[in-house]
Image 1 (cartoon, rainbow, N blue to C red):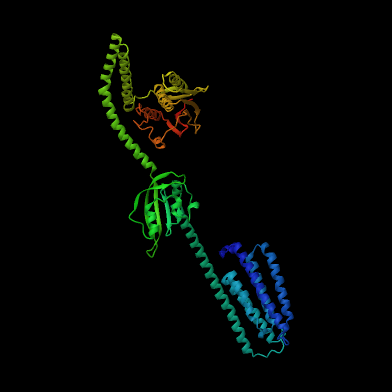
Image 2 (image 1 turned 60 degrees about the vertical axis):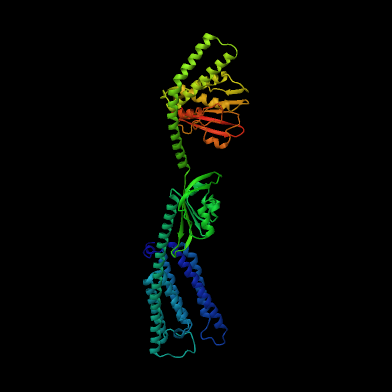
Length: 556
């Protein structure tokens, strides 16, 4: 393993190279087998083909043994040395049996030398070239001096200078092949290393680009020139409800941007988008909800100055619109506060005097008939006007709540009892309320809590002019065990909140759909609940009724 590390080669890579060496060896041997067959078919072969067949069979057997032993070998470098050395010995034998100095197969030395230079580096290639030079030179010398009889017959005699030149040329070729192949192998390995580094840098850059695009807080959508989506980051998924996988390579309309004029103009015109650099548009979410979005469009240019696509950066403006609406409502509330204070100051005291005077006259004069009805109307309308001015003052200048431990069920039972005993005209409303056995304690002002329950329940009763059922339920509403909450639900069987657009306005001051309502009951209820750290939720069922849920922090 140390030798492999020195060469910058992993074991898996070395195993692959040795498998290729075995495969190439078999391919070369197969060519020689064809040559041997051709030689055998000749009438007067230059050398007997039987030794050639023996060498081919020997190489096939060696290749089989190499293949079996390769997975079990631990020192792959030594195993490679042994293979190449055996190949050089086999090449020497092949040259000897095919004519020695006149052998046409002297070039086979190139194959093991090239393999050594490629697999073992320059030192290995030059070493194997030296071994091949010694064996080849020794073979020619032994044949020349008659120590080793030549196998081929009929070969012409060669002068000593000719043979020396032949040996020199072949040996020079061996070393030249070793040098060139080792150089090319090193260059190839260096190129592969640099390519791998560049590939790693490219993958890191691509990963960084994906992370940057994915974590941009604004929605980012990139289109090609045909208007197909090629990029869609996480913020865009969260805003539109569409996943990148389902909109990628699809038209921009598939992501809810069909009503964006700048994108449509870009796709239809094929050029840069119009002057809409930034603006407010409407985006249709996957669930069909239309949301306001701030969008900025910019063309995507290539290096040659051509428009390749469009980049759209957008944000959901729903929260911004909600805040703006809250600010406008706060401005209206400030104006209402000034008006309510003035009304209370100018009307309440004279109203009390008028109401008191009428009551005195009624007791002294004891009016009868139509006069008594008129007096009753005056007193009733005076009480109604007093109620309106009182609600104005409660809404504009609410008193500081006296926070204490309050038993919620007791307050709710008193409210239900008062509601049952309230004088009403019209169809009957059935009260469905079964208080829980365990007490429910909250931190609140009991008077204000009764006012909340009264306003909501009275609103529910008045929403059922033809009669119905008001169901009151108290249940645990804790999402976090460390912060327990309790919910009081008022569910009526009226017609619900219609039209649906009114659902967002029912808590606005002075908004009412009733002829005699002031539009302050629900506004006061929500303000009190929010001051107690709770909230009011509404579930509307058009044609079936509505449910108002008061959620409060629970102490016990």
